[in-house]
Image (cartoon, rainbow, N blue to C red; front, side):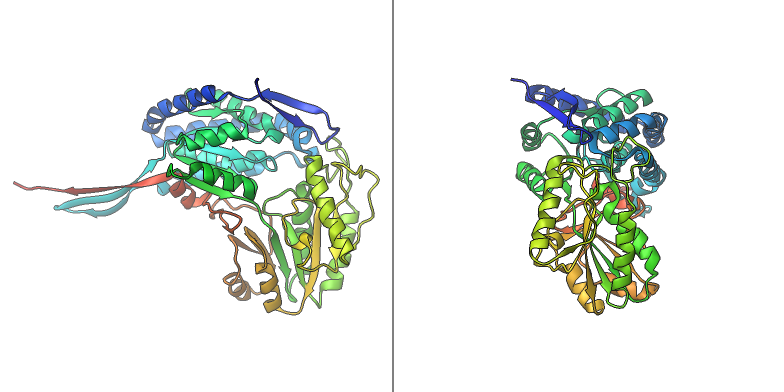
Length: 460
C-alpha cells in the first residue's frame, strides 16, 4: 500500500497538499542516479557550478509570490512579511562569494624537493533533511554550499512544507542543473532511515527535533557517515542595567514572537536586571497587546496560526503548567484564539526554572521573563539548559559582553541583536542542540573531506 504525506493547512485545517511517498526501491534508484551524476558535476569548473546555483536562487526570487502564498497556507506565515527570499539569497550569495577561497588548496611546501598540499574533496551525495519552520532558508544553508563544493544533493523536506521541495526542484531544473545533481524526494521516516543505514550518503545534514537527530545518528551508526545536527534551542536574552531598554524590548520580543515563536534560535526566556525589570515587562506587554492574530493571508495580520494544532497544544500545556505553579500571564485571550492552531501570544512573569516554560523547548509565541540581580545570576540561569544554540546580551559594554559570552554554553553570542543567522559566521551549537558547522568557511569544510598530497621530486 502506497504511503502518503499530507500537509494540513493551519489556516482552516484543510488538506492543502498530499503526495505519495517514494517507495524504498525507487528511492534507492534516485540515490544511485545522484551518485552517477556526482563525478561529472564535480569536474565542472567551480565558477560554472556557482553560476548554476546562483541562477536557481534568482529563479526562486522571480517566483517569490509562489513562496509567500504557499508558506502562508502550509505553515501560517503572514503574507505581510514577504516570505524568506531575503535571507535565502543572502546565505546563498555569501557562500558563492567565499567558495573559491574556502575550497582553495592549503599549500604546505612548493620547493625543488617537495610539493605538499591539502585539497578539499566533495563527500559525494549529501542528504539534506529540512524543517518546516524556515523551510527555504534552512534548506539553502546546506544545499548551496554542498552543490558549489561538487556534491550532488538529495532533499527530504518536512511534510508540513512539502511544496517547498518541489519549488526548489523546479528552480534548479529551470537553472539548467544536470539530471541527478539535485533531487527532491518525498520520503517517510523509515525509508529515510533505511537509506542512511544503507550507507547511501557521504554526508547527512538534519535540522529538527532532538529525537529526530538521535534517530539519524542511530541509523548512521557503523556506516561512518558524517551526520550534522541542529536540534533547536531554548535561547536566552539577558538585559543588563546599562542596556538600551527600548531597543532590547523591541528586538527580544520580536525574537520571541516572530513566526509565531517557531524559530530554532528564537528567544524563549529573558533575564532582566532588577533595575529595568518592571519597565521591560510593561513595555513588552504593551507591544504584544498590539499584535493582530489572524488569517495569514490578510495583510493586517501580524501573527498567524501555529503550523499545526499539536504544536499549539504543547505551548498551551507549558503555559497552563506554569500558571498552576504560580506564574502570571499578561495577555488576555485574543478574539481569534480558537483553542487550536490560532494561539494568543503570551508573556509570563513569576516564572522559575522548575517550570517547563523556562526549561523545555516551547517553540511557540510564549516567553517567560525573570529579574536578576547581577551578571553572575544571569550567567548561571542562561547556562541552566539542555540546549545551546544562541544567546542575546544587551549592553553597551563590549568588553563585558565578551567576558560574559566566554562563559556561556552556546553556539553563537549576540550583542544587541538576536534571532539572526550571519552566513559569514559558523552556525553551530552544543549540548542537546547537536553538532554541526553550517555556512561560513567551516560550512565548506564540513561538506568536503581533506585529501593530502605529498609529492617528492626526484632529480637525476
